[in-house]
Image (spheres, rainbow over the protein chains, first blue to last red):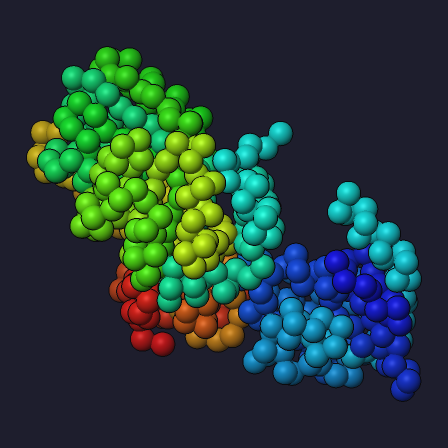
Length: 129
Length: 363
């Protein structure tokens, strides 16, 4: 298993978020999540300006195997979605922390329970054992 | 405690993601389900199908027994090794299982039934056999590999004993042969050419290793499912079960109505259903929009009624989502599917979607 990026926060639903300099938050799914899902074939994205609540449904990623909800890790407003995923959903498989980002949020509401890289790594270690 | 096939160590060595499938530790994929799918369509892949249950039926009355047990008629089989696809029905005409029966001779047949239905199948077979004095023997000591794809036979041939290699290459589709204590058949579940090879468990790892060395790609249950869906081959438990008759599962062609005096189990119920009419259709669906159709999604036919997707997924060959569905009677070729609350347009298409590497529907 590859090293977790140290500059991100994580959730127990295997999502990551990056706090950008402009105050917005970029959200994606972790390498563990993409690996468990397998080859992605479709991503259902929210509308820009849609408001999301922490823990609410925000997007759906579908692999050949199954559909999986992506939850909003924090409350806020969708300010951008990764349109490139509609033609290339496998970007999530190939580069989950980079080109495979899913949504950018402007924070504005509750924050769910976020994990540090170490805490998320501990959760992964727990799954593996 | 899950069961392991004789190839478990081979799967782990090939990097498999192992999942519990009907009580068996089986490979879902070895890295990329899509690439395995394409390998089978374009080249060759090998599946471990040792979890499937092989049952030999033997006795003077074996033929008579199977003619009464199965909805298709083993009397059609007269060449040793010839295979027949059939359903095994209950008295209500529901499908207990679908299976392949191989004819060895009039007193010996080999059945290959599903893994998930093993116990009830064996119980049913043994119960029915009581009256017929045939011997029902599960062959758990055998392993089975399915080598599938346009290059499958060519690449697999050097991996089998030279003594029967040429005879195996001469097999016609849906024929098999005894080959020492091996059994080779030109059958499969992918819509591609290939062999299914039954070997003693101890010999399976060596055969697997040789196939991989020959360039055959290890392929998991994930690819097996997308391949069979593209080929519109039914999956027991999804597309039919004990509450669905073959007539409503696209399997009417497997019912041998003639001769009319052959009284197989379920015949009376099927006949009643056929005569009553109004049966639901079993159809292929092609999603017109982006998205993925999934099992159990609701199908809405405007002005006609509703049905259900029995097997849905993404077709790697077509690059769109396809499904098999049971839908109301009627003449229509458009419908909609409820995908998470949104009604998406689908087209009703003639299956198979894909066969022998070729897309067979208009996309």
